[in-house]
Image (cartoon, rainbow, N blue to C red; front, side, top):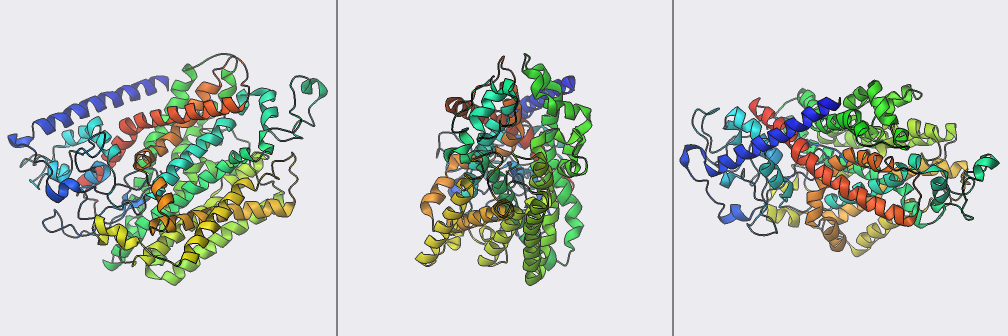
Length: 636
């Protein structure tokens, strides 16, 4: 496995260098000796819309499918195509919301070709050379007939190498969308990713922290059953650890960051599916005929980074450190080497954990339980989207039934087993409730319902951004609701989300928790329902232009760029934490200063590694998938 990792890293670096060289040469010396035209006029000032996301999805998340393209503008390369469900540009979970009059035409371009303009509008010039106005013309006979410079018609070898071009991928990273109606989702994704790292900073250090670490963190009562000789080896804070304070409720509240990613995935997946199903239905085609490619495309978008992570854990991580603490952090790597890796590549580790909770195999890359749930939700999403289009009343009834069933499942399982409302207190709660799809589906279903509501609000015939120019899309979405409704939604969302985040002070005030059974069951059943409802209220106000300050913060352009890295950051951040925490020569001593320094350094290192992974692996994989779909004729 170690040599496999070395070979993979060498191959990616070699392909990146070769692809960059080919890409630069193609721009300097275009086929036929011509000179690529410069952007001018309206094209120079458009910002074609890239994918809105994560998905994990988170958590960082991870994703939807690309909706069918609207008929191209006059003079475009194709007429209206048949129905097809293509993967979204970004693995984090985003639907392609671009305007049909300004987007690239081929799948390869849709996966990686966007502009930011006008030229010189930022510190860096992120204009993509693959923009329609800047592409060199194709040569006759070089992979197909000339077609106005379509990327899919260049020689296959050149097209393959350019998928790895650092120049192309860097420009795609910095490209911004023209229509910012849904821009607030970028901020939600980025802050949620930071929140995940915030919570994991403590969780992934507990094994290397020792008893004094636990004493500084856990509520009073946790050490009551320890023998006197053990109690004498550390000191207990008289009022308990930090989790018994108000400010540290933000640590266990980080569980809601995962629910945010599930909500984003439901929203963006459904937003992308509705017009695709609608177009398929209008063309008389069965939606399920494209389902195999829908599922396969999703798997191919997520799995490259999962594979890199598995090779890193099995082959590289053991060689990165040593010392007295190093062996304590090897449980996940041991589970992967024992054969647990296949559970991650099939996205079933959460189900395996329920079937065989005593097995160590499902602990391989334990944080990827999120991807398993998200994949399972993604596969089920068309079952809701299809009736929402063909029989809306039945579709809404199905959504309501599924949401009610998920809420009831949480309540029944929690009541029967007597769970406290935190996976920190009970490992069986983690395997039976926290990571299972039927108990985690609430945010995804609420996101799907909000997408259907917004689609209907915008007319329902197609996403508003496709029926309007980028300049008019945002104004079309803008609404003016009564002041009492706007302030009521804002106050209600704030009250619910703050209560869910800080209302657990009593839960963590002592161990065992003083909460009653009714309190625990209610919180387990309703908290993951209330959180996405609050998110939907915030999103509605931002989408409709009625919360300009909040929307301005969440839509800030650097968050749009970083949002593309959140999937890779989610994948890689535990590797950074293990490498740092278990390389120490003595147990970690917890303090507020240690927490602050560790969180900021982990966030910085995860972001840097995510950038490298995005440029060298994630984006090239997306480009290759788009190229393959284009060559096979599987494009809208």
